[in-house]
Image (cartoon, rainbow, N blue to C red; front, side, top):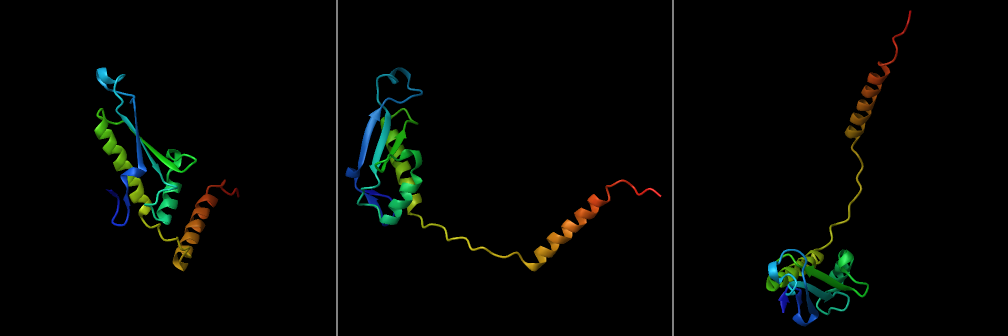
Length: 140
């Protein structure tokens, strides 16, 4: 079991890892060793996720989410397979933790205070006076 939060833990059977050749540095092993990790997690059918967390995770998934609701995380930052595996898992856990946070409270519209309205109008009047004074001088 992979512990995500106090209430959410994932079964390791729900994760599917594929290994592929990473782009970037790798020395002589770059064309021989499959060090990049592609971690797949089926968000839509996971029994471990509560429904509100699942909905937020599906909304947050973006381009990492397939049409079937499978979250795909590719990790190829490191040269070692194990470090890429832990990196992909850490990124998945971070995404789920972010989705598990409660949504922010809705914004309540407020009215501007009377003083702020008056200050705004005084500033506009002062600016208008400055602009009015820029015209041609009156000829006598």
